[in-house]
Length: 171
Image 1: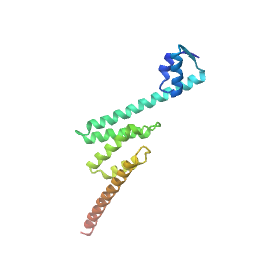
Image 2: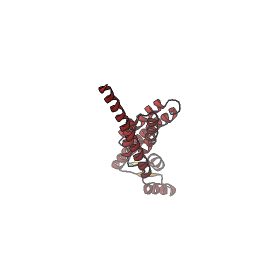
Image 3: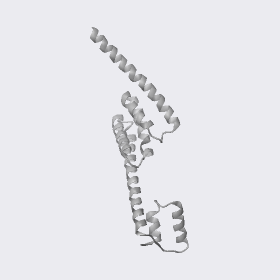
Image 4: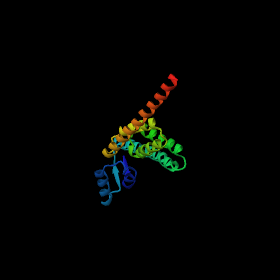
């Protein structure tokens, strides 16, 4: 299949390797105006381009949810938490691993859950966050310590409830 070289580069540059792109740009600089591509290679490139576009679209949708959460943090933390949860849910469901698009949502949600004293849920999100390979060693250490503190708070709450229950049973 014969293609106009400039249009070909314009359409597929995002999925071409640096070497391929360099070769094609050199061909344009040398005055070439067209290129030959096998049908198999054309179909492969179209498939890669569609996959790339789907990935970008999904990444953008996740980012929009994260930004909505950030918008609502000051005026409605509960609403912000809903957006962050949707953002995380969408990111976790993705086959593309867009962790960088929703990592911030985890961090902010963990902070908001702490402010709302929702320790059980906060612990669940910290555990989920720590499962990602994109978490740095420093973050891992920080959130493991936080998880330890929260676990102590949860146990203290359970023990106080148990003591109250015991008191009512014996009263």
